[in-house]
Image (cartoon, rainbow, N blue to C red; front, side, top):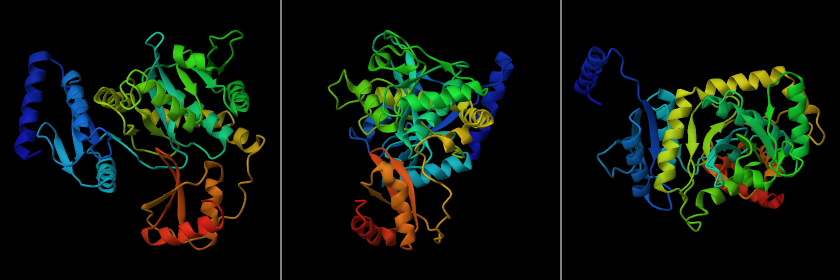
Length: 381
């Protein structure tokens, strides 16, 4: 934007104030990356146009190839470049939120999806759908509960109902959450629509949205999100819902929402709306507040003393930190941290992360091949 454009905006805002007596609402700045879609960048642009048409509180920018004059475009020609530019724009405040595909969140961060029940049209949050809150299943489910509550509250639901999907680890996670509630952390447990009720939900409860927040592990959540989003279209074009949602985790301070590569323009439009609502609702403040409240209720002690948690007291392995830009996929989530330690023991700096297709190990460019050999030799790959 030029200085002249800025002056024009100030004059127009002043005119609006004189005419209506109200200051013009500040627009939410949302970025959309254009590379990676299975339906092509024009499908994403159609979603952006629909959002701009229906919601007048948005300032949408594109990141990728220059394909339209409808929006400001930050030009880039690779997925790595679009993510680098996206992160810089978020860090500088030029964007309030961004939507992208195939983005590797750090370990400890996972996304909270937003879906629509086919039975009654009720919206609900699915916590979580990509990323991973912890490599321990029960610990992840417990954290996913806190994250889902934070997202629901940021969108104005002050007392969301919460249920945990009936998967491995659900009963232990329910026990953890009940202990948190007994210690003062407010959890409003839902009731299943099935006979006997209870906060541990069945598949039926997904279809009826029995809870405002339905908690599950990431891979199950990812599958359910894809199924719910595309069951009317035959599976190749995701049309219903809001995408995989924002990455949420302790100390993660960017509002980054994930789209599936199969997302159609209706989901892109809804996801842009979701992003703007999260910014307005101060998502990061709610996440910090809920984590603080949960820790005051003993979250850390509960997670560290529950059965099956690995000893975290081992001395940290010292390896010189590097910038990690190469990801190695194929390591099982249950041994992801062990694989990272194995690389560090062999002198290679590595970090764990989670992409849209599963867990990844991140290493520097020059370490990719030796790291792969070590992982193969030690039977992680």
